[in-house]
Length: 143
Image (cartoon, rainbow, N blue to C red; front, top):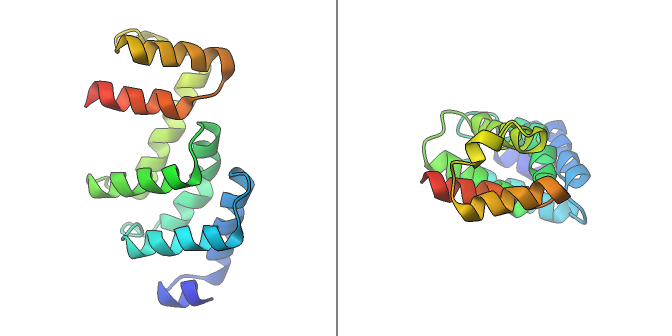
């Protein structure tokens, strides 16, 4: 309730976000979840009034791509700092990239990137693991 009152949010919305995170990321305690949410509010991640909704919608996507909960919050923060119009767009980037990596529609684009990125992508296609590494490599290649 303290988080809800401090950041003018509904207690139910906080609880849903904690549940979404715990259902998506292994061994995540309630305390750690609440600490991350509190820190996110303090860092201004609710700038588009959809911080909790983004946690709810995209926790499973970040987890499926191989990201940790800490990486999810770091990516949200980096997106906010780099001027993403809405936090939802940051989460949607991860979701769409994960879909493209998983269904093979990224094959042509991956062939145009660095050899290291191509190697990471080939390993991801074999194992289904390391989506976070592929994503990071792609971001370095296009930066």
